Each structure stands twice: as structure tokens, then as C-alpha cells.
Length: 167
Image (cartoon, rainbow, N blue to C red; front, side):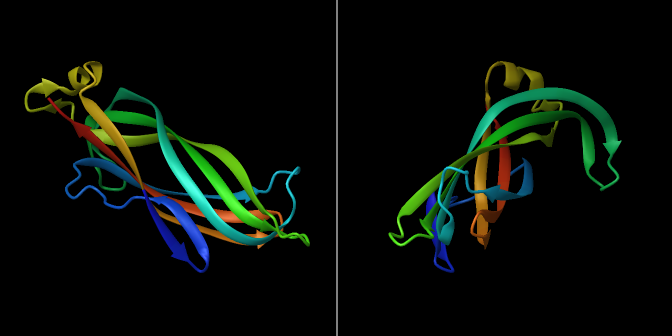
């Protein structure tokens, strides 16, 4: 996990490297407005944001075969991945002491779909899933955050979900 400074805001959790030849993947962005919890003081300055992604569950489903409206080839199998994001916002309070505070958030990005083949090298993909010979890796590609006002932050995360099947 890397650290990057942009416009005096520290971003923690951005992947140092990304997969070089991914086969089964999805790249997404998640934007949201975060409100500072009521028990916390107002913000004067945003100092940093930390993001971690966690895979909650995966399940394989059968789908139609063909081509989607977007032009993606549909194999007849799709992996549904449930993710949870753990986030921490660090800021300077808008008060004479200018103390530093951290607000924590958990958000769910439900149902990330990754099209996978129904068979890999003669083995049904269900066997890989059943025998736990599959890994799902989530890489944070970019984080952007800005203070909207003294109680709200706009945040955008770009993330990459990579599915790898092994023997």
C-alpha cells in the first residue's frame, strides 16, 4: 500500500503495482459524500484519507451466453463479488486548539460482476471455486477527496478487481 500527497492531502491505500496481464477483471469508480459524525468538531482542513478494500463474499452464477449491449462477450458464467471499504478521514478541527481528528466509515459496494469462462483448460470453473483455487484481489488505483464545507467531504475511489484461477 502506498502513500501519495496531492494538494496537501495524504492518500493512503493506493496500490504500488497493478496486475500486468489481468484476464478476468473489472475497473470501477465509487463516488460519495461523507459527513463528519455529529460528535466530531467541524473541519478546517482535510489532511488525509486512508482506504482499504475487503472481499466479503464471492459466488458464481450462470448467465446468458452472447454479447452484451456494451459489446462484452458473455460466457455464461459470472462471478459476483461483494466488497466492503474501510475508510478513515483525518482532518484539522475548526477550533482554537486546531486538534487533529479521525472519522471512520465503512461502505459497501455491492455486486461487482466479473465475467469468467465456464471452463478453464478443460476444468469447470465451479471446481476452481469449490476447491478455493481462485483469488480475488482488489487494488485501489486512485483516491480523490475534497472538503465541500466544514461538515462534508466529497470522495472518489477508482478500484480494480482482479480474479485469478489457479491449479
